[in-house]
Image (cartoon, rainbow over all chains, first blue to last red; front, side):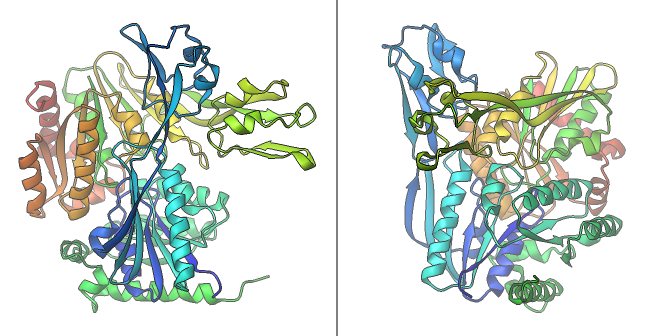
Amino acid sequence: MEKPFEIVILSGKGGTGKTSITAAFAALAENAVFADCDVDAADLHLVLTPEIYNCESFASGAKAEINTVKCTACGLCKELCRFNAIEIKNDEFTIDEYACEGCGLCVEACPAEAISIVNYENNYIYFSDCRFGPMIYGKLGIAEENSGKLISKIRQYAKSIAQKNKAEYIIIDGPPGIGCPAISSVTGADLVVAVTEPTLSGWHDLKRLIEMIQRFHTNVYVIINKYDLNKDMTKTIENNLGDIGISVLANLPYDESIVYALLEGKAVNEFQPDGLIAGELNKMWGKIISTIYEPKSI
Amino acid sequence: MKIAITSGKGGTGKTTVSTGLFHVLTKYMKYTVQLLDCDVEEPNCHIFIKASRTASYPVTISIPRIDAEKCTFCGKCKAICAFNAIIMLPVVKFIEVVEDMCHGCGACFYVCPEGAIMESTEEIGTVDYHDYYAKDEFIEGRMKVGKALQSRVIRETISHSKQEGIILYDSPPGTSCPVVATVSKANYVIMVTEPTPFGLHDLKLMTDTVKKLGKKHGIVINKAGLEYRPLYDYIKKEEIPLLGEIPFKKEYAMAYSQGDILPEKDESLRNTFIGIIKKIVNGEAL
C-alpha cells in the first residue's frame, strides 16, 4: 500500500466504547501508528501506556487584550464585536476571554491602538511509543479552545510518522459529537468506524454523525456495542441502517471484562484472548482489512 | 440558581442526571424550573422529556460574499482573516470565502476599502422552546449537521435562560470551549462520573476546569457498584462534595435505552435526585 490507510473511530454520543475498541484494534493491527484525537479527554494512553519521547507545545488560539491605560472608552470595539466579548467592568472595557474568538476586528478598529492579540500556548502534543507501535496524542490546556486545529496537527504528525515507518494503518481514537473536533478528525480520512449503543440516544446521535460523515465523503461502518442491553433496539438500528445502505460490522455483547481489562491497562482482547469479545473483534478487524484490499468498483 | 451538568468523559450520564433532576423539580419540588439542552452537537434531553415544541428561533451568523468584479485584490481581507477562510488568486482574479472556516466576525467586511463585500445570513442551528406543565420550560439548542460553530449555538441557547428559579444546563462532554461556554454561565457545576479509570481521569480534567473558572461544584457517581477505590480516594482527598450515587442496574440501562426518565418509576432514585437538589440549594454542597 502506498499511503497509510487512516481509520477513525467515532461515535456521536459519548461513552459508547470508542476507546476500548480503538485499543482492541491497536492490539490487532500490525505495522500501524495510533493517535488519540479526543483531545478534550484523551484516555487511550491509559490502556496503551506509552512511553513519551518528545513533547511540543501548540498554540491554542488567540484572544484580544485591552490596554486600559490607552483605552479612551469610545465603545467602538463593543459596538463592532459580534461575539459580545467586550464587557464593561468597573467602568473599564475588558475582554470576556471565554467569548472572544480572536478575530482581531477590534484590534484593527481601535482608534487608540489600545487592543492587541495575545497567543495562548497551553496545548501539548506527545510523541510516544507503546507496545503496539508509535502513538501520538494531544492534551488540551484546561478550558482551552480550538481542539479542531490541535486535531489536524496530531493527524499530520501521525501521517508523517506512518510514512517514515512505512506503516500500513493509522488508527485514530476520535472525539464525541459532530462539531468542529469531529469534523477535523473525519476530513480526508479513509474510513470511519462509528460505535453506537442500542439506545434511543445512541441512534439519534448516530444518525447525525452519519449525516456529517457523508457530507465529507468518507466511508462508514457501524459497530453496535452492548447490543444485548436492548435487542429490539439493536434490530431497529440494523434495519434503519440497512435502509440507508450502511453495513453493521458487528454487534458486541455487554461484557464486564472490558472494565476489568481497563483496570489492568490492557485491551480486552489482550486481557482475554480466547473470550467471546476477542473473537468478535478478530472477525471485525478481518472484515475491515478485506474491504481495504478489495478492488474499487468503477 | 443556574446549575450546569457536566462530565469530561462522554456517556457517564449527564442527560440521565439532567432529565432526572428536571423531573423531580417539576413534580415534587416548588421551584420554577427551566432545562436547557446545551449539548447542541448531540442533544438528547428531548428523547426523555417528550414535550411538544412551541416556538423555534434560528441561530445565524453573517457570511461574507465577495464581488470579484469590484475587488481590487488588495489582500486586506485575507490579511485580517484570523481563520484562513479567504482564498485569493489575483492572477486569475479569483477570490472566495470558505464558509466552513468562516466565523462570521465581520473583519473582512470592515476592512474592505472597495465595498466589494456583502454579507448574507447563514443558519447554523436552532433554539427550540417546549412547554412543560404550566410554568416550566424545556429549551433545546441544536446545531445544524455539518456546521462547526457549536459554542455559538450554545451561547445563543443560554441567552434564553430565565433570571429566577432553578435553571439546568445539560452540558456537552469534554473540557474545551463548548463546555466553558456552558459552565461559565452557571453558579454551580455537577460533575457526573463513573467508577472506572477513564471516568476518574476525565473527572480530574473537569475538576481542574471548574476550579479555573471558579465555580462551586459537586460529584454524582453514575453506574456505581464497581468498587473502584481510586475514584473515592480522589473525591475524599480533593474534598469535593459527593451529591449522590446512581447504582448500575441492567434495568436502568434498559429504561434509559427506551427513553424513560429513571426517577419516574423508581422511588429510591427519586429520593437520590431530590437529595442532590437539596444538598445544592441548602448549601450543604457548596
